[in-house]
Length: 556
Image (cartoon, rainbow, N blue to C red; front, side, top):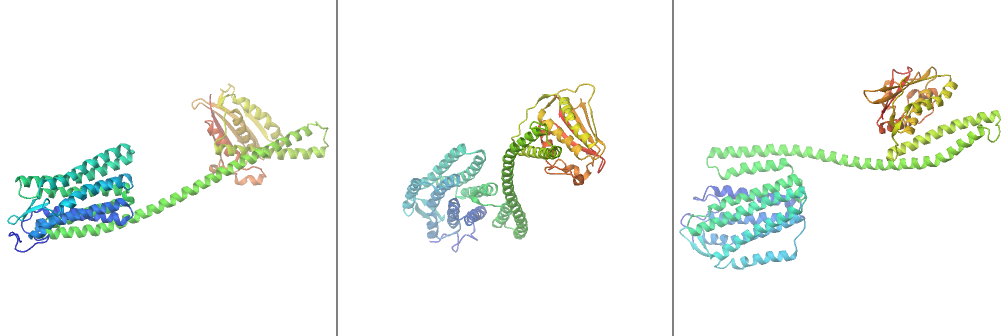
């Protein structure tokens, strides 16, 4: 039977008398749903949530097609056939939405029990679909259908309402248990899918109820509910861009260009004026071309960023390996130094006893040889001590006993020790202490003695003629005590100053004085002084003009 409103059967397009909102609400919603569902599925086809989303998109598309048939066709058989599937599509969409929520939030499939419950809910609709309880009467004059009864219609709308409450409970429970970041993701997903279900089912139920009561003439109210799918897909797109949902990296530029294309393209189903139709087409082409260029440039930038991130990660791994190797080296040095220090100390002790005549006066030739052995042993002792301090500093095991200390006592002790050495080298050696006694310094006495001893020893070692001067003063405004060790030696060129306190660093001109050293003393001293809250640095006018090493320590 053919409805009298159309001369010939119509299929989707060019049907007269249909509401203007029909195509604008149906086609964009269906295209957006199917596009995102297919995009997610083909990006990750093994992901269960992606397969369920594709199923939701397909069922929604089938509902759209059936609804378009009922609005645009005038063949009663075709209309009845399309109309009979609404209940199945409504209920399937509802249950798939619940299934999708479980899998998306939990990251795993649901139990067999829940699947059987879903099947049990859907079974009555499948059984009653081909009966009179679904479609009862076709009105030829109005080209419309009378439902078979309230039970069937209310049942599948009730399934939608139960699905809405079911998902609401799931979102509430999962959000309470989730972390702050996952809670935000859960709430965004929940709002999107609940908005779709609420708008889709409420608009459909209200349209059906109002038509049955005679308050409105058609089901045009349900058009507005279809936009809920667009909102839902928008939230899913944001979750993909922001949180890489479905294990997919979707660029914001891609999502933006796609959204603009859909918005402008959907106008083609709505505009009537030919000029506006052409302008809309031109705008759509421009958006597609510009969007393609934008997406390509953004992808290139992202690709470079990913390559840089890979290089950074590889560098971090290499640095970690180097750190472990450096730690192993420090531990080896520490162990080796401990093993070396014991025999060196014994050698030093026995040589001292021989030189002091405990075993009888040594012959002059042997005494001279023993003095050289003693001097070489002393250098080895200093080297081992530097290596031990280096390993302790780098492993964080160097201990400090900081307490109020009379710094003048340390300086007098060192002056008495090095005065003999400078006298043997024919160098002048002076120490100028302030007339007013210095306050106590808040330091570790043994560590300060070691640092100042190394500084004075270097000053004597690298001075061929002239002398070395030690001067101290109180910097009241800084609450510091400053010790200055000045020599007339080889000096420090400006380009070497920044390396002087580095590990294993020595000046370029030290070789011409045949000075021995490893370049560890100043590095270790700097670490010690800074750990005690002080500061050490060097000043020099240049090559051959001497140098001054300044050490500052805090006042107690």
